Image 1 (tube, rainbow, N blue to C red):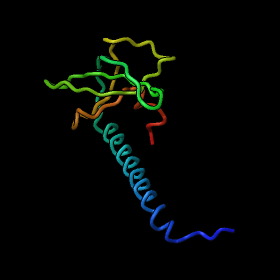
Image 2 (image 1 turned 180 degrees about the vertical axis):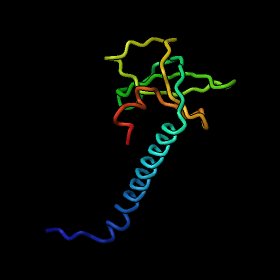
Image 3 (image 1 turned 180 degrees about the horizontal axis):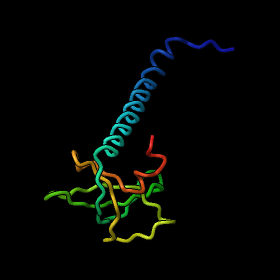
Image 4 (image 1 turned 135 degrees about the vertical axis):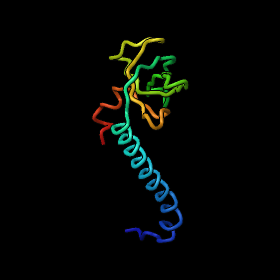
Length: 119
């Protein structure tokens, strides 16, 4: 059986593993905090779709880009797009929820009410 070299673990594995663990914790806590703020201070309004886009390897993750107005300020954001079940076009309106204290933070109603976001 091969002996595990402590120096290898100390100098190679840990410098990679520690930032990954810290980054994962930060994203989890940040997402939960933002969702809690939307639950507490959220307000539903309509937004206009202005672009369909994709990201990730081969563009497999689809998203809709939308604009909404709160007060005199226009904001832009994005949400998940489900092209197989959504019949959306440019200029269509969708319902979103935004944080009244920080209007730049928003989600589509479908994303917000999805069980995946209720963590």
